[in-house]
Image (tube, rainbow, N blue to C red; front, top):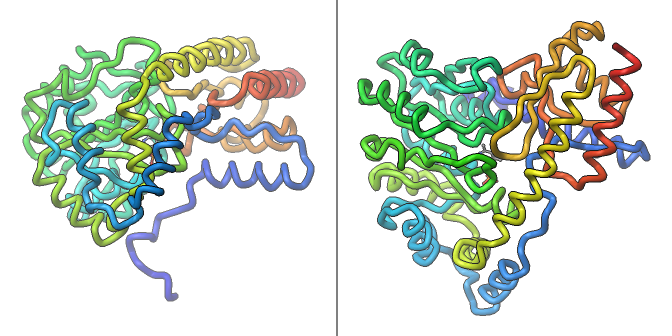
Length: 387
Ligand code: PLP
């Protein structure tokens, strides 16, 4: 057929998007649906950020931006990270930073180590860029975290990247400084392996958070840090993320970006600058609100039959183990129980297989308290009847 590019052969529409769209269709047909499936804070973008965007547009910042980002925003990001602006690229969301990095660095069949559970897009972006995702399951019993032994065993001469995400979507796991050090010691022995450290949930940590570069400065010349404003400042729709890494990599990523988007929206960059340089007290307020929701959701899940939910240390997802509920309820899989919950209880949550770790499901708690309350009580009631 016409649509035959080998790079999209295994590419599918994200299960998260599919589920969210199905929930939206059911809702529009009049069904009473609670969707707890999306990774997006329900808080509004702060007003001072919106005003900065408005001012920028009126002041004529409506022309093509510099490909790597505006000088002001790159300087602000460089200052936060203690690097020079040449080590910073601004992109259309953190997602495009990931895509730029993979497109710029991977040759066919180069391997990328992805500890599971992982954000669904990691494996798809690697595959889209022609690389091979090497998924390493990291079970709940090990806190959903990669061990140095598992990392060592997975490295081959073709390994190019380790993708780390702390705090993690979907598990909420956070790597301590000691855990980062242990991984860094393995990586020190394998110079061909770079680290992509996705720290986009940094400001949504409920225990002390350690940046990869702070714990492993000796690897800075092969580390790319990914971050952005989407989650911390409730700016998912503005599409601004950034990468911090060695200047040569940043330059190559800029060459990719220049042919795909010409750079991120100038107005959104003005908004992101206001977010980074304005009042930061909202980060603490919002983190406290998310933390209260987390406590509520984790307690609610653990009170259900067949459900075990460890406490997420960061981000805004619960990732309970449903394996006992799946077995006791006679379900075929995590996907089957999630489909049944949408049908029977009108609650949308995402099966663990979408994150490379079946037997679990992801429930976002970035929703209003009353929706969380209602969603939890419906799941609980449905399980009570079935189990
Ligand atoms: N990285 C992780 C771990 C995420 O969960 C997400 C969004 O879901 C992103 C990156 C993408 O963020 P952005 O909106 O900046 O593209």
